[in-house]
Image 1 (cartoon, rainbow, N blue to C red):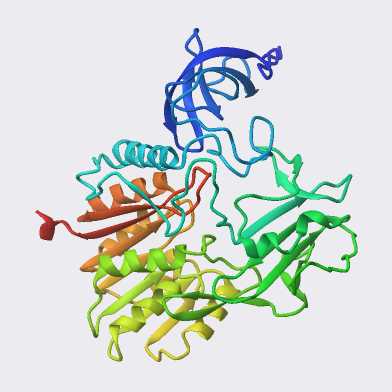
Image 2 (cartoon, rainbow, N blue to C red):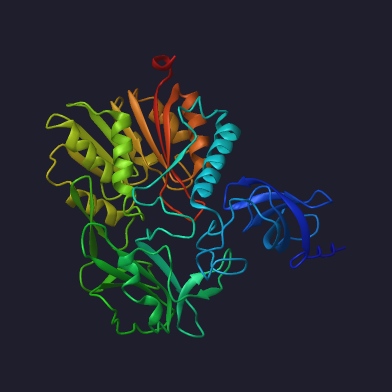
Length: 443
């Protein structure tokens, strides 16, 4: 006999007391019956009416939006963006919170993940508990930093208008302006054009150069439009069969500036989105590692060579850096960007495959900036065996960072310092830099 389908609870409303913040841009609450709710658009301590957006009877938890605020938090503000709110644009998580409160919430998430997944208190991690805003981002409540130098617009198939996706949805929220978009993106006027036949339009405004780029992803069989925007721009397209990125006109790359160097980033490759992020992270990593002339360093998940370049600058002619990166175009860019350093080598492939093949048995310094999922137990165990005097771990996900810090402890490393930076204002994302050293040197 087939079990009866469980009843959907979507649309049900519950009046609840909002508990602590959770990783992912929501807070935790419980219904009178004890059912766990992950509630967006709420703040800890508030009393709200939460409307279920996902879930069914008997589910481990339900997702919900706060649709009416009965008792607001003192940290609540009117969302500056007209497209923010329940059922609207999913790009921001904390438009309804004061800037300082956003940073406190991110700090609480980091502390909770460290405790739960690594068994570390902030003190044991060498962290003062603060999340630092980027230079120039400390604005009064109601004002929004224009920081997003890369915006992925979705295109509504019916209207051809560009917008942003709603939270956990393929539906498009049409917008006339994104408040967190950098000026260089906004001035292109993407939202004012007809993009019929396109699936998405990514806009990139480089930091430190006037380079602008759009990357078009057409729907199957669609022809590319004639791209006429409000500023000069290079155009690339994503091939529907291979997924590769091809130049239509202009340069296939943008030039980014960081740490006094220019970096070529091709085909929409990875670069930090906040204009101050690359310099902020390089400074934190170099202050933590304190590179010495002549040392040997690894830069893992090295992208186009940001940290490898910074290390090579500081290690001098007798120093050496090995970078490892899986992306073919990023490796080409890194080799181009670092061609003036004869003792920098960039290898292509996955870190877990390439690193063992190098035959390296010891290094002085390691930088790793892994993807959101983290490095993982096997890679961390290998890194811990190399005897580095210091390791810098750059993390965009506090849960993955905490898990990997626990693995490093198993390998004999302790956290010396941890710093957290709010390089994604209005969203739940946060960047951390942890500096590790062999445990016997610590205490």
